[in-house]
Length: 471
Image (cartoon, rainbow, N blue to C red; front, side, top):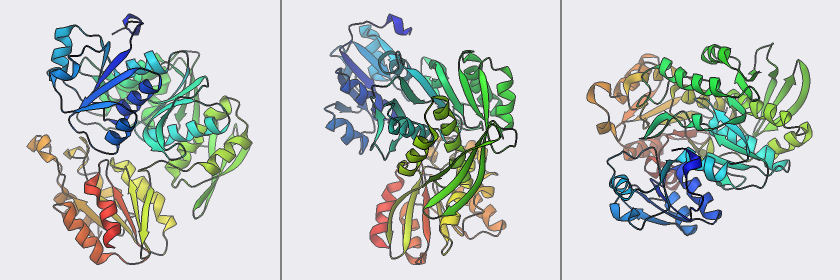
C-alpha cells in the first residue's frame, strides 16, 4: 500500500502479531504519539506482554476475527502472519486499511527524518545501539527503533526530537503481501553494511538469493546517500560495484578510509585505535568485546564523524555505553562461575562470540552452551560449518532443537552429528536432549573461574536464572 493513500485521520491502530520485538516497539511508539493501539498475538508472554500492558495497550491472546471487528482505522500486519489468519480474513471482509510494519514506521515514525539504516547479516542491533547512543550523548536526541534492549535507555526505542532516526535494516521479508526485504522500504541518508552471508534459510534459497536482496538495497540508494561498507567481505565488494551512492570502506585493510588500528585488552575494557584517511583519528575504550564489535564501533564512529560529532564526544559516548541485553550480557556470578547470555546462532556469530570472550576469562574454561533454534540453525544448511565454530570453547554442550517438527525431515539439523564432528576435532562436546539435562551436567561440572556462555535466540527455558540458583 502506498503510504500516501493511508487516511490522514487515523486514530485507532491494531497490530497483528504485536509481541515481536519490532512490532512491540512500533506499538509503543504509536501509543506515545497519541494513537489508540490494540494488538493480538498467539504467543503472549513476558517481557514484551508486560511491557505493552504497562503502556496501556490491550493485547488479545490468540488470533480471532473479533479482535478487529471494532473497526480500527488501520491494521498493521506482522511478517509472521499468513493471509488465512482469521484477523486478516476479517480485515479483508470489512475493507479495513492495512500496511506492513516498515510502511507504518515510514508513515508515522520516520517521516521527515534523516534515516540512518544499519544493514548486514551480523551486528545490526549492536551497531544501531552504539550509533543511537553516540547521537543521544552528543545532544542529537535521535529517534531509534532497535531489535534489542539498549541498556542505557532500558528500551529498544526512543522518540527523540532530533532530525535523525536510527533503524535496523532487516533483510527478512516484509509481510505475506510483500515478500521483499524490509529494508527496501527505507530511504537512507546514510547506511552501514556490516557484511553479507547466507542466513534465513526459510526464505532465502542460497547466498545468491541473499545477495539479490542486498543488491536491491544498494542499487536503490540515492546518489546523495552515503554507504559505509565493510572492506573485508567479498560479497560486499561485489555488491558495491553497482552503487550510485558514495561508498566509504571501513575495516582493517590498509587502504580503508576508516581503519581499525592497535587493540589491547585490560578487562573489563578493550582499547582500540582508529585511523581516518591514514591519519590517526583517536583512541577509544569500550566494554564491548571482540574484533567484530570493534568493527561495528568503527562504522558507527565513521557515521558520527560524518554528522560532525566531535571525536571527544564520541570517545565519551563509548566510555558510557552499557551494551545491549542478550549480547554478551553477564546475567550473574555464583561461586566464581559466570553465566553469560548471548544471541549468537549463525555459525559466524558463534565463532566470533567465543573468540571475543576467551581473552576476558584467562583463568578458567569457556563452557559453550548452544541451542539451535532459528529457522536456519534448525536446518542442515550449516551442519558441516558449525563444527568449525567452537574452537575457542573448552567444554561444549549442544541441545537438541526443541522445534524440529517445523522443519521437513530431510532438512533437519542433527545436534548429535554436530557433537560427533566436534569430538572428531578433539573437542570435549556433549549432546543433551533437553534443557534440564544440560543444567544437571553444568551444575556437576562447573568450577570457579568458568564462564558459562549460553547462546540462543530464544528464552532457552530460563536456563540462565535456573543455573544461577543451583550453582
